[in-house]
Amino acid sequence: MTQMTIRFLIVDDSAIFRAGLRSLLEAHVDWEICGEAADGLESIKQTRWLTPHFIIMDMSMPRMSGIEAAREILKEFPKVPILLLTLYLTRQLEEEARNHGIRATVSKTAMGHLVGSIETILGDGELAVPTH
Image (cartoon, rainbow, N blue to C red; front, side, top):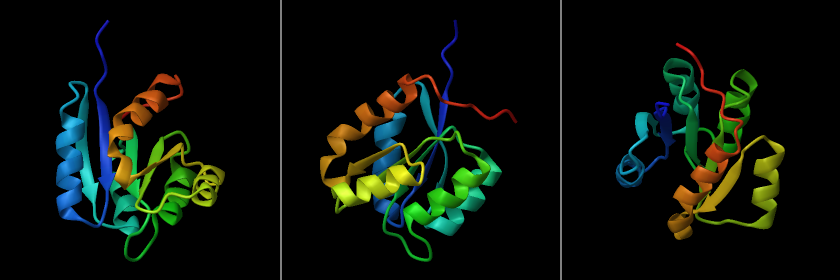
Protein backbone atom coordinates (compact mmCIF):
# COMPACT_ATOMS: atom_id res chain seq x y z
CA MET A 1 0.00 0.00 0.00
CA THR A 2 1.36 3.41 -0.97
CA GLN A 3 1.60 6.07 1.71
CA MET A 4 -0.31 9.26 0.89
CA THR A 5 1.48 12.60 0.95
CA ILE A 6 -0.14 15.07 3.36
CA ARG A 7 -0.34 18.62 2.00
CA PHE A 8 0.05 21.42 4.56
CA LEU A 9 -0.86 25.10 4.46
CA ILE A 10 1.26 27.21 6.83
CA VAL A 11 -0.33 30.44 8.07
CA ASP A 12 1.78 32.90 10.06
CA ASP A 13 2.60 36.59 9.67
CA SER A 14 6.34 35.95 10.17
CA ALA A 15 8.15 34.85 7.00
CA ILE A 16 11.08 33.62 9.11
CA PHE A 17 8.78 31.49 11.27
CA ARG A 18 7.04 30.07 8.16
CA ALA A 19 10.43 29.13 6.70
CA GLY A 20 11.44 27.34 9.89
CA LEU A 21 8.13 25.52 10.06
CA ARG A 22 8.47 24.53 6.41
CA SER A 23 11.89 22.98 7.11
CA LEU A 24 10.57 21.11 10.14
CA LEU A 25 7.56 19.67 8.31
CA GLU A 26 9.35 18.83 5.07
CA ALA A 27 11.83 16.72 7.05
CA HIS A 28 8.94 14.23 7.31
CA VAL A 29 9.00 12.04 4.20
CA ASP A 30 5.23 12.01 3.58
CA TRP A 31 4.54 15.69 4.28
CA GLU A 32 4.77 18.60 1.87
CA ILE A 33 3.95 22.29 2.04
CA CYS A 34 1.41 23.19 -0.64
CA GLY A 35 1.28 26.87 0.33
CA GLU A 36 1.77 29.66 2.81
CA ALA A 37 -0.30 32.63 3.94
CA ALA A 38 0.71 35.69 5.97
CA ASP A 39 -2.69 36.44 7.53
CA GLY A 40 -6.14 35.03 8.18
CA LEU A 41 -7.80 36.51 5.10
CA GLU A 42 -5.09 35.14 2.83
CA SER A 43 -5.44 31.73 4.52
CA ILE A 44 -9.09 31.53 3.47
CA LYS A 45 -8.19 32.29 -0.16
CA GLN A 46 -5.28 29.82 -0.13
CA THR A 47 -7.47 27.07 1.35
CA ARG A 48 -10.02 27.52 -1.43
CA TRP A 49 -7.30 27.55 -4.08
CA LEU A 50 -4.99 24.80 -2.77
CA THR A 51 -7.35 22.50 -0.80
CA PRO A 52 -4.71 21.49 1.76
CA HIS A 53 -5.12 18.34 3.83
CA PHE A 54 -3.98 20.10 7.04
CA ILE A 55 -3.64 23.73 8.16
CA ILE A 56 -1.20 25.09 10.73
CA MET A 57 -2.49 28.51 11.78
CA ASP A 58 -0.99 31.24 13.95
CA MET A 59 -3.37 32.80 16.47
CA SER A 60 -2.24 36.45 16.33
CA MET A 61 -2.09 37.93 12.84
CA PRO A 62 -3.05 41.21 11.18
CA ARG A 63 -6.48 41.62 9.55
CA MET A 64 -7.97 38.42 11.02
CA SER A 65 -7.04 36.17 13.94
CA GLY A 66 -6.34 32.49 13.54
CA ILE A 67 -9.58 31.57 15.29
CA GLU A 68 -11.63 33.87 13.05
CA ALA A 69 -9.96 32.47 9.93
CA ALA A 70 -10.41 28.89 11.14
CA ARG A 71 -14.11 29.51 11.75
CA GLU A 72 -14.53 30.74 8.15
CA ILE A 73 -12.45 27.92 6.64
CA LEU A 74 -14.32 25.25 8.60
CA LYS A 75 -17.66 26.50 7.24
CA GLU A 76 -16.54 25.43 3.75
CA PHE A 77 -14.06 22.67 4.66
CA PRO A 78 -15.38 21.18 7.92
CA LYS A 79 -13.12 18.12 7.89
CA VAL A 80 -9.78 19.86 7.29
CA PRO A 81 -7.84 19.68 10.55
CA ILE A 82 -6.52 22.98 11.83
CA LEU A 83 -3.79 23.20 14.45
CA LEU A 84 -3.47 26.59 16.15
CA LEU A 85 -0.09 28.00 17.20
CA THR A 86 0.20 30.71 19.84
CA LEU A 87 2.81 32.39 21.99
CA TYR A 88 0.37 32.69 24.88
CA LEU A 89 -1.33 29.35 25.42
CA THR A 90 -4.05 29.38 28.07
CA ARG A 91 -6.79 26.92 29.00
CA GLN A 92 -9.36 29.52 27.92
CA LEU A 93 -7.77 29.85 24.46
CA GLU A 94 -7.65 26.06 24.08
CA GLU A 95 -11.36 25.85 24.94
CA GLU A 96 -12.27 28.65 22.56
CA ALA A 97 -10.27 27.05 19.77
CA ARG A 98 -11.92 23.64 20.31
CA ASN A 99 -15.37 25.28 20.38
CA HIS A 100 -14.66 26.63 16.90
CA GLY A 101 -13.54 23.25 15.52
CA ILE A 102 -9.77 23.66 15.83
CA ARG A 103 -8.30 20.23 16.52
CA ALA A 104 -5.28 21.17 18.66
CA THR A 105 -3.45 24.16 20.09
CA VAL A 106 0.34 24.21 20.53
CA SER A 107 2.49 26.86 22.16
CA LYS A 108 5.21 28.38 19.98
CA THR A 109 7.48 28.00 23.01
CA ALA A 110 6.93 24.20 22.93
CA MET A 111 7.50 23.44 19.25
CA GLY A 112 8.90 20.04 20.21
CA HIS A 113 5.26 18.99 20.64
CA LEU A 114 4.19 20.10 17.16
CA VAL A 115 5.06 16.97 15.15
CA GLY A 116 3.53 14.71 17.81
CA SER A 117 0.34 16.76 17.80
CA ILE A 118 0.14 16.57 14.01
CA GLU A 119 0.73 12.80 14.06
CA THR A 120 -2.00 12.37 16.70
CA ILE A 121 -4.50 14.28 14.56
CA LEU A 122 -3.50 12.36 11.42
CA GLY A 123 -3.70 9.06 13.31
CA ASP A 124 -7.26 9.55 14.46
CA GLY A 125 -8.52 8.29 11.11
CA GLU A 126 -10.73 11.31 10.42
CA LEU A 127 -8.57 13.05 7.85
CA ALA A 128 -10.74 13.84 4.85
CA VAL A 129 -8.57 14.30 1.81
CA PRO A 130 -10.19 16.59 -0.75
CA THR A 131 -10.13 15.40 -4.34
CA HIS A 132 -9.02 17.77 -7.07
